[in-house]
Image (tube, rainbow, N blue to C red):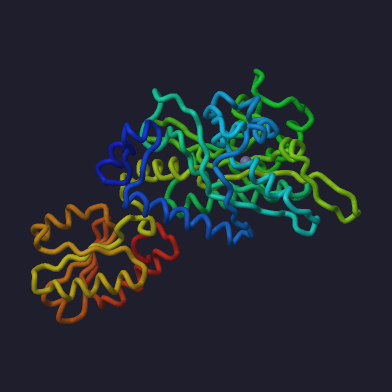
Length: 405
Ligand SMILES: [Zn+2]
């Protein structure tokens, strides 16, 4: 496997500048395409699964995190507060408190549950500068986050649905889980004290894991401070594991924020909060995609999906026309003409691009292209419109296959 920091620089995906600061990468246009495409995919999946999206600010008053428990259990990882007009505001360490307040801003009936609230939003972590590098240890994190407010009876089903969604997303991204982990509390004062709550949440997550059929291991000392979680681990080339996706069942924050819903009995009840992230932070997800695929992203995620190669200047106009047609179908296409070197050199420099369409005199005259796939396959010349329709269908389906089987 590859080092995403080295490849990210070579491929022009992201960068950093000491004047912006360590752990605060910026995304270059090709990297931004990959990130944006991933974000759109996940929002679409969430919409299909009944989530509604919100936006919330990256700052909050210190008091907010005192209520959530972050201030007493997580302060070492938070940026110091900023003084502002006699108040202290803090860069948020997570989105949960904001979502709990959004839930609390209106009354809810049991008929609205499960209420699935999603946001792909920023949060901040005061990592020490010594451990920063690339996209995996960053101080600004953009998390594919969601909170499901539901009844106790609905919690296991919601957690299981999130786990299934993670499986589908990994298949589309062409990555796999190295391990599933049931992260439990360990010794030390890091965790909120409520033994009964921990046991109930751990029992529900165990039930979800057992019925999903995946192998998993219990990991004491890896829980969030407010509850146990399922962590989906991915591994890099050196076998180092990192958590990409998580599913948590939380009784603590609904209690702290006094969340309620009106039950069928006319009385007020406490909802359960399921926290879940399907692809984790976009930073870690893209770092892992770069390393797993060595920059050869699945076609739907590739910064450039199709490069069009006229053999000589005589086919230039036909090639430019083909690029316009491809762009019109939403494909990311580029023309690489003879001014960029021999055909062989142009093919080599586009080796990470999933599709290369070669147009010579014969193809130009017949309205055809000779398609080469990134994996070395060369297809017979065929009508350009037929090729574009096939590529657009594969991309729309988020297929990891380069050509229909
Ligand atoms: Zn959360």
